[in-house]
Length: 373
Ligand code: SF4
Image 1 (cartoon, protein in one colour):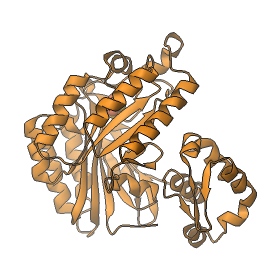
Image 2: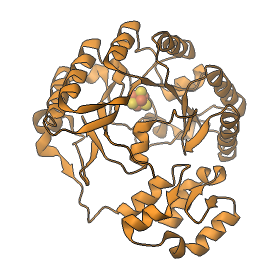
Image 3: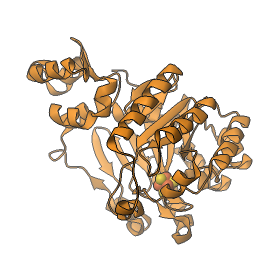
Image 4: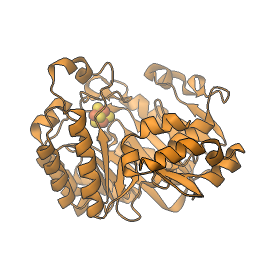
């Protein structure tokens, strides 16, 4: 397993112009937010608390929420504190998540001057009816404007988020989304199956809406895998495809169990072998963040299961030697029969060094992982 020198830094921006109908992330409607200024103050204070610890960072990820809603001044202020508080290693990957309709030339030139070198834009679908059902705030033309603007501002590493399993989505409409997006030649594509999260508006209306069948969803998944492979994208993680050397280095840290620091509401950290997270209660975060930090009890936390689960998300898979070094056990010997059956079913690639899921295995990864942990 390849590891890197620095740690990752995740910065959470918990507001969106309007909450999407499927979203259960920690984010608020901007119109309900009267604490924006206080949040930036608290976030900067939290970042500043790492000062003088000489922590090296080689990936930065502004996620949310919608980080592209930050004004240029807010963005520069947060970046200023980051620079003062951490050692930013040369060549660090610096990603900002953006929504179409929230980007403009001024913001992009501030991103460039702060060192942002990767943009992740949420599109999901090119079709108006699908975007409307999802409650997205943009249409495809607005996405295209944002994408071209980013290219004009010389952002040469762009991810586009897509979704399958959207109500009213058909094979044809999904194929069209895929083709239009491939024509733009982004460096990275994230493709997620829609998950109905309890409590979301989409979940509450699920009986009234026509979803694609499971078979159609499966066909969409394989169509994407085939077409993306033929266009030179490697399927390096269950939901992520990248051109050569354009994998998201920040997210790789999570999947490879490397260390990272999360700042902001509900942000999680893994630092010096310890896992902890900030509260998801905005009032507590704003009044006394450090008093509301939740430290994970390592007795409750199954590191072994987590290692297996995360390693198998990646096409590089699980290395038996890493597993033996970390847990003192022989993965292959303990599961020899199961692994043989999975390999016979073309669900896993099995070598004497390690194990990874096949394309077929990726699609049913949850059940394989449950079987192996
Ligand atoms: S833009 Fe992203 S974070 Fe914001 S509501 Fe939509 S899905 Fe959630």
